[in-house]
Image 1: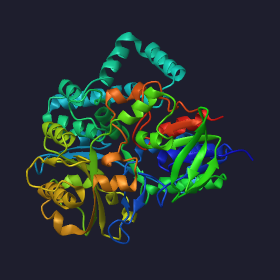
Image 2 (image 1 turned 180 degrees about the vertical axis):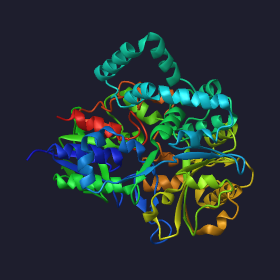
Image 3 (image 1 turned 90 degrees about the horizontal axis):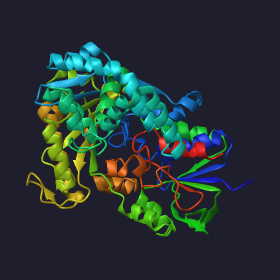
Image 4 (image 1 turned 45 degrees about the vertical axis):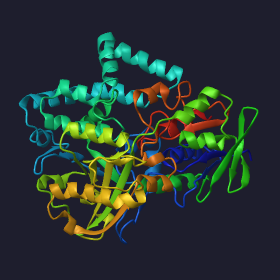
Length: 515
């Protein structure tokens, strides 16, 4: 039997690559330093018994629509993969009692708009969505390799023509605010959509961020959203089961301390002190960790500098809550949405990002409040709820407090006070909310990194997606297809194109390249 393919890290990209390869008869071994597989796609009882909380990722829409699921969805279902469809994907809570929500019912969505002109614009955008989504979604599903990329761009240029192609190119470089200002007149709608940019490190005024509010808004309207039945880890469990069914293995508590290489070719890994030979290595690692494991020298000085200088996004703090009852929103309709974003204005989001980037605890953090048990009661005891709260953005290293109230400069001391600031914002939108809390677990950015070293400084997207570090520049120009200067060593994961999310594009691309 030949040498196995070794995959470092059991996040969504590593597991997808392993499952696809194993299904094709390849010998695959996955090594995970943590006690359980899944990376950011895990579900655990973090507060009380019977309350299942998604540790990081909750939305599995990208995974459901991924190339991997298109190919292996039927087999994944046999291994327990089950999605819960959601008709009310997101809403924005602004002034208490005021909200704007997107559901798959077009009339229900438009009823929350404050402008007749914006309603007409929304309808026009929906009519145009299939064509534009085919371009934008197709690009995100194309490897950053010369011929696949050239073929894709040529086909789209022929289909759209020069003028439309240039319009799409301009859109890809546009900031959220610029696109929203030229598209909608109601500032409430601009606020609601701009929040999606903050999920991927795009404050309202950062170039290249318009694509994400557009895709999430139109996609949410057209298709809604999905989460995993019982928790996001249903995807992880199904993937591990599929890998093992085809003879592969996933080993946890397996620390890879070195990637061995000789003469410009990878030869194996050192796991828990033991050398293991490999035919190919797929490394789902943040750039600084990959560089460390190869000994700091790939043989290409520019690649090494790129790994050293790879930029991470601001951090995220997670608050997991066990509730005795649903959140008592002042705007009662908010109790129908999977995600409730809390942020007063687009300018509040911009200020929050600037404060976090400067190392300050934001005065008004942007919140993503997930309400999964509204749609999947199996995640909590009967009549109870779990609440999943992302506090975005916050600094990994605290240099001060923008509000001047928190004196601590380390997260262990500051996280309780910062969590209280976030919960105050929910209480403002839902008086009596705190009375429903049965238990709480707060996870600081550094706690996130301690549990998953790829989340450097609590950066849940494993690297900024700004234009200088995206597309052909992710993670480094000349290596956007994930290959490295060391033959037989391939990068996968969110630090590689097409970036963060549960779509597992880089893992699937890498698996397809192994014949």
